Image (cartoon, rainbow, N blue to C red):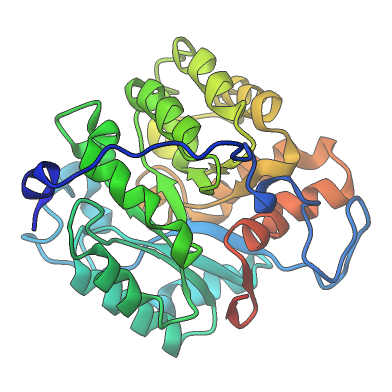
Length: 325
């Protein structure tokens, strides 16, 4: 059943009386269970919270145009592993790039075969009446940590507020899954309404909602980020920024105003570093991409840096070196 069919069978969700506003994963100390907040732990895990794999084909990846020719090839765990090692990272969260059940199965298979993949944010049809069956299948893998829908590509800016989509979001908590928000700034008002309705659901905002860094535009993105961050069950990935800047022509200073906004809004306990590899390579290599955030967070304590470099990701997605807790 697709979204349109499911809509006819949907009964509007009711908010439970006395529901808590915060998900515990978002407000506990930003360290792994073996560490303590604000204290350096040499065993702290380092995680790239956002990257992709694919076997390239023109039909499956039509969004990769000639300006992104560098992406027109396969990107697999064997390509990522040396980058993780060179940058002192223990692993990554692999995120869906196609909206298909087949890709989610493929990513979970890759995660089973490659220990560097600590978790998978896959795709499931949140609008389908068959969603429980899909999630039952995928949740057999300890590496499934969340799901994502490419909301930024939907023609309806209010897509996330459709009853059938909200019904799907309501089912994620039973499987202990995070929902990744892939948005443009214009979608943030709808995101605020969505996260307000689901105080028990953990959300992670991808790519700081893709503000127009190339044009130096802050508003209305800045105000909307502040509204979204008021909900403590929402975290944010410091990822995807180089592709919103002037490709290959950016400077570190271009990102500072945007980092200032998200750090003031979310604070170090709800932020996590991510590369968006290989997409980032249209604008910067892996090390330079991560280096933007690494330079910015030099001003923070060791414990806070540890949290943003992996502890927060491990806590929110509930992953260990072996997969989901």
